[in-house]
Length: 222
Image (cartoon, rainbow, N blue to C red; front, top):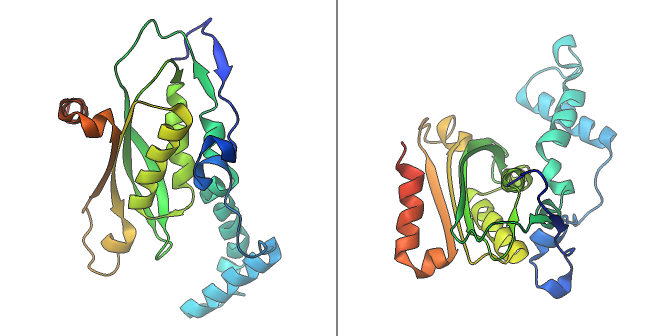
């Protein structure tokens, strides 16, 4: 999709009049002011002490700084706008009228219930109208939503909704397969268990043959 000499056109900037969902058109506005870095590091020291460790010992003395640095990276999705990720499209498609599938997009996220990691693969397909988006943008969109506190179900729906609303796709199919650390290393402790979530819209929901083709292409080579 990034072929040389392809005409690139920005998609119209997202605004409320376009009917985009809040999570698609803008960043999340917190209900309370964001704590300072010093306050965040102090909170980490409190958690270290809560575990029973000594927050002043040499081995963990710099841990609060490292944790906050890690949070800035892990949760960078709160500072990114999904609509902007999809704002550059390509018009020279040579009459292509089938769906585009990007599968096995690796991601890692954190569940909003325990703030523990879950990770796996996302598979994203969409049926373009008259324009397509760069393939890397679909992977980037997955990362934007993954780099927030999430549930897998919510993340699946958000990815699909962004593609539907911004690209005006004729159909969208999203499947996510992930392992959740809150299930594999605590609680029922069942490592290796995968959770699968899906979202189908447009032609993928209306025409069973398109759904079968999506699943065949997804599973056929495995």
